[in-house]
Length: 129
Image 1 (cartoon, helix red, strand yellow):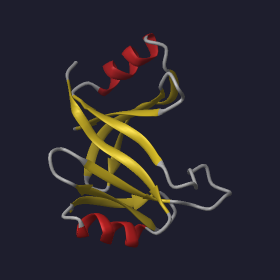
Image 2: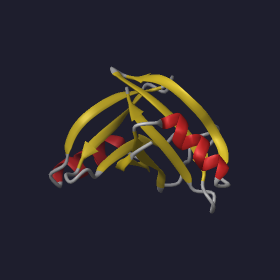
Image 3: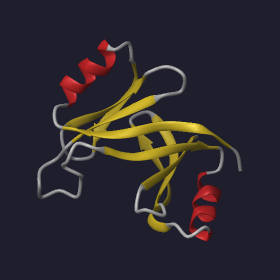
Image 4: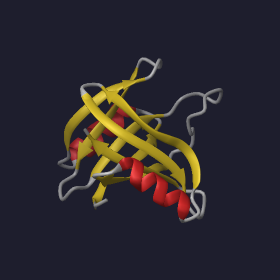
């Protein structure tokens, strides 16, 4: 298994359009977007250069499972083996959040998995298929 840096860092935002305008105004380029399941909102990937991608995730209401405070939501590590990275993380003491799954994010097919790291931080393993 090989890692090749971050794929993206997810940020919960109150106003996705305002945040989109801010990050693209700074010179970022929208590289991808996809609908946020059942919410009618979209998630945007903004490439800030140098393999620094910010994922803008609209905050949902207090009744949802989604984080409602503005904060970085997770780090996503780019890997060629999502399942292997997940299994290794569990062996190293991480706690399971979401087991490896192959999903379509708009037109992008990926394998991703989530664990809670040593301090409870969310870590995503991400492979574009």
